[in-house]
Image (tube, rainbow, N blue to C red; front, side, top):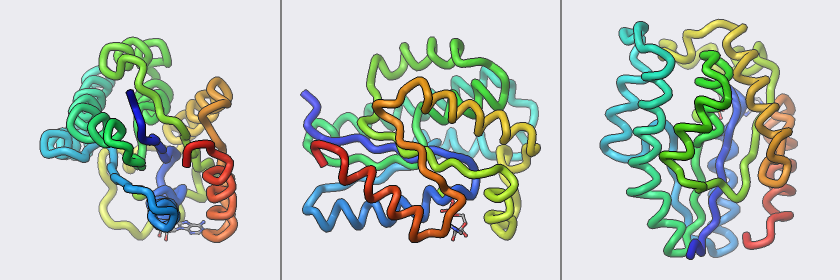
Length: 208
Ligand SMILES: Nc1ncnc2c1ncn2[C@@H]1O[C@H](COP(=O)(O)OP(=O)(O)O)[C@@H](O)[C@H]1O
Ligand SMILES: [Mg+2]
């Protein structure tokens, strides 16, 4: 049924996801592909409203399970409104984060564990998975240094180094458990060498 191709970019703050997403989209367009870009949480009217709640530092009292469900509520809307229709019409979808981010942030960072995330994922996604997931792996302190000048921190960016270490480790566990779909990119290198790694991963994909 699905004719398109689904690429997700994962990794912590300052890993270079947004920077490389632009290059990926240019590369795909250069090969004549139709491309839809999305970001999480967000990407639809409702999902962007949920994003506001999730990132608002005034919502410090949001509990981890509520956070997990809101992430998947926003994701469900994005999948139904944008991702599935695009894939069905043969479009390449490139998403800045997707379900693996919940394994990393809510499962790892917030400590809910992978099993809780898996249960919600099963209800919401019913088996939908990316065809390729690029994990931009970077030491936490280096990523934080890159985004230090970005302005006021949101509810996630305000978290501790230890939180982001848990996020990083959960991402790496996720990659190790799903080697067919994941490519781990050494994101600590400069923009150009990182792109070379990404381009190689794209070129190796049948169907792109
Ligand atoms: N490979 C790189 N080396 C050094 N700086 C980078 C690299 N990639 C991106 N940057 C810079 O680091 C900051 C964060 O990059 P960004 O792409 O926004 O990361 P993310 O979207 O993963 O948070 C930006 O200022 C960007 O210009
Ligand atoms: Mg970004």
